[in-house]
Image (cartoon, rainbow, N blue to C red):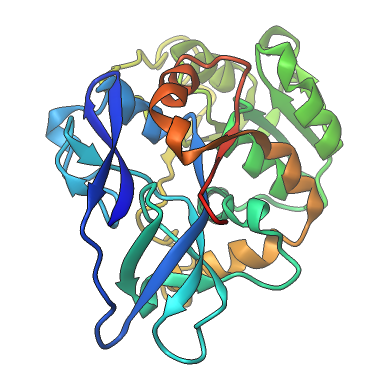
Length: 323
């Protein structure tokens, strides 16, 4: 029997057993080593914050059940291939799979983990992939002045990648002083919203708050662009399109990982994008995003605490038996 975590109803989850199976042609059997929980879509699922009208759009690749629950949901899993094509057996792989100790997926759904990427860090591949897509959408230029508003998992990952660009200025904007460790590890300035520098060429908004969106527009320079990465669930934030929004010819663009950014879509597949994210994880700076760990058996008790934001978590690792 296999064990998986299910959200039963908003605020409640449990571990359930299910009958396993052998892989068929073109499939692999993966024994999970680690999975990850971030304070993004998964905590919205846990709290019942996914609007019914977009529940189908928000389905995870290997989700079982339907939102708001009971549902098996998750998308950051690293494991060892136990059965399948000879070239993959014994290799570590990443898959966009829920929290489950063993699972069978198509060969094309797994991405090999390079030898220079530790298992813990490899869990972050799905979020790094999101950050790659954001920067493909945002298209920063040489000498740009950029602010990333919101220092959570996605905002932090965007900052981690953007810091490698030849920029004139890069600030991480957040109200939480606990993000100072993240900013220090990335070598960027952490500033409160009221202290953020203005005249930005580009603002990447990841705070999922109305106030963060408004401040992001305020610090844009004329003809600047704000890339909206946040997903608000059932919230409907007000967008300040009055005052000088039109006079300064500001722009707001959406970015979402469900499709490869338009600027790369003709030349990159989603598999290419994920493989790139995995290679980028050779950088040990990404270890700063791993802010806690628990055993799979404790996940039903841990998930409510993560959803409540206890300790300003980024990515919480789930460790599997016999890992």
